[in-house]
Image 1 (cartoon, rainbow, N blue to C red):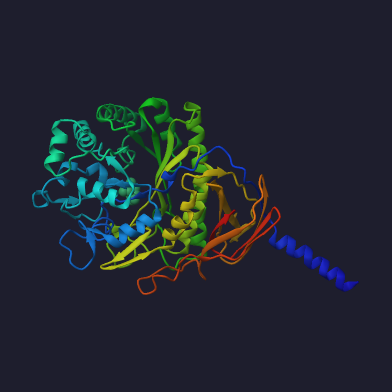
Image 2 (cartoon, rainbow, N blue to C red):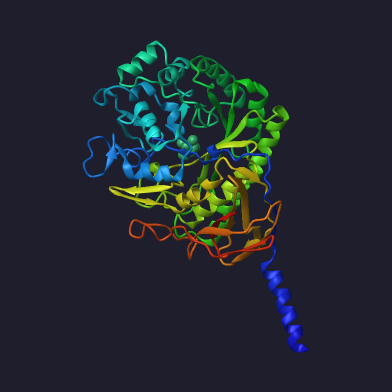
Length: 511
Ligand code: AHR
C-alpha cells in the first residue's frame, strides 16, 4: 500500500517536474509567411569586419580569395543562406562618401574612420567590391545611404550609379569603372541612427529630411521600385516610430527600422566570456525584451498603417559586451559563446511570431564584430555558435508560420524569472519545422506539443548545445560547439515530446 502510494506520488512528481512546457500546434498551416529577409547580416567598416574579415586584398598570397574576398567566408555565408547584407554602416554610413570608393584603387583617397578606432581607411573596399561580393555570396545588398554628412545629390548619384541602365553621367562612370550592367539594388537605408551618430536629429526634423532624400532617390528606381528604409527607433523610443509614421506617407517608405542590442548596461557591459549567471540572465532579459519592443512598435504602426504596408526592419540586433581584453576597444571584437546562441534562437523565434510586421532584420555584425557568425585570425576562420543557430534555423526562411505559444517553466536566478523555453514553427513544401530553445543553464526541459491538423509520422532533428553557457569555439578548438543529430524527440500519435538539455537549441523536422 505504502509502496503504491509512493509510486503514485512519484508519477505525480514526474508529471509536475517535466510536463509543464506545453503547446498546441496546428500543422495545417496559417496564412503568414516568415520573410527570409529577417535572416539578414551586417557588414560595417568597423574593426576587422571588412578588412581581414570579408576582404584581404587582391594581392594576398596566403589566404585563398576571389578578387580579394576570402573564399572560406564566401562558402560559409552561402551555406548560411544570407538573404541580404547591410553595408557600409552603421555609424560609418553617415560619414561615407561613396565616390571615394570607386575607380582605380591607387587613386582612392585615404581617410580616417572617425567612428571606429580612428584608423586609416584606404577605401580599397568600395561599391564595386561590395556589390560584386554580394553576387559571389548570392545575397541581396542593402546599402545604407549617408544623410548625416552627405548631400541629396550624393545619394541620388549613388542610386543612379548602381541602378541605372540607360545613358546618364553616373551610369557612364560605372561603365568606365568596368561594370556594364547595373546591380539593381533594391534595399536602401535613408540614414542610420539619425537620433544619434547619424546626426543627433529630432524625429520631426528627421522625418522631413527623410522625405526630401527619399523623394530624389526614387527617380533612379530599379525594377520593382526601391525599398526605402527610414532610420528607426533606439529600443523603446516609441515616440520616434510614432512621429515617423505620422509624418511620412506610407507610399514613401517601405520599412521603418528598429535597433536593439542585448546589453547589460551601456556603462558596464560585462565580459563576452567568463560572465556570471546573473550577467547571463540580464542579457537574456534584454534579448527577450525584443518581444515587447516589436509588439509596441507594431501597435503604433498599426494605428497609421493597418494594412501593414510598412515593415518593421530590425536592422541591428544582437549581444554587445566589452571588447576582448588586449584588442582595440573601437573594433568591438568579442568572443561568441552559447549565450549568443541563446540570444539568436530566442530572437529569431520572436521575429517569426511577429512575421506579419517584422519582414527584415540584420544581426550585428557578420565577422569579428559584436555578435559575429564568423571569426578570423589571419588565415584561420571559425564558425561561432550564433552561426550554427542561424544555419539550423534557415529552414524557416520563406516558410509559412505555424503559430506556437509555449506555456513554459520558469528559469530563475536570484528570485527573478524568465520563461525557460521558447519556440516557433513553420511549414514549407509539406515539411514542418519546430525550433526550440532552453535558456536554463541547469535544468533540462521536457516539452509536450499536441499536434492537430494532420498526421505526422516521423521526427528527426539537430541540436546545438554545450556543457556550459560560457563555452565558445576558439581557434584552438574551433569545433567544440557544432550541431549534432538529436534523438530526444518522440512522436506518439499526435503527441510530440522533446527533452531539451540545459542551454540548447533544437530544430526538428516532421513529415
Ligand atoms: O553595430 C555597431 C554600431 O551600433 C553601429 O554602427 C550603429 O548603428 C550602432 O550604434
